[in-house]
Image 1 (cartoon, rainbow, N blue to C red):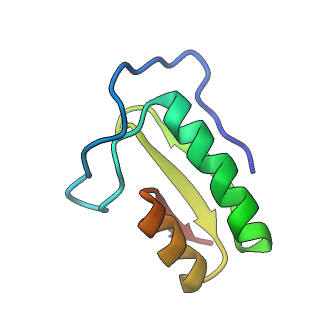
Image 2 (cartoon, rainbow, N blue to C red):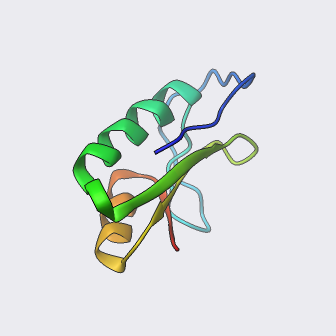
Image 3 (tube, helix red, strand yellow):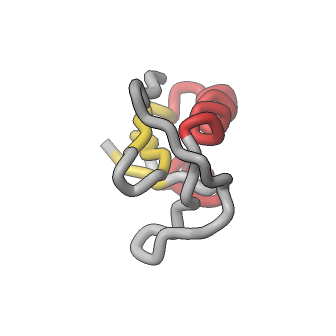
Amino acid sequence: MALVGAGVTVQSASASASEDTGARVLSVSAAGSLSASLQRDLGGGAAGAFYDASARKLVVNVVDEAAAKRVRAAGGEARIV
């Protein structure tokens, strides 16, 4: 699972939720940690991830709804691919 966040720094911690997806607002560091954790937990259910710098959230591509629910519960935005 790849995490893209080069050249982006965000000072805020992961505290609030985005109204449209329920995804938490994350710093680059927090998104990296969450990405690594989800990759371990989802195994083959994950299909890549990236940090959306403008929205300050982690977007995780997943293969099914079960994996999507786990991503959302952890504070990421899931996209079924």
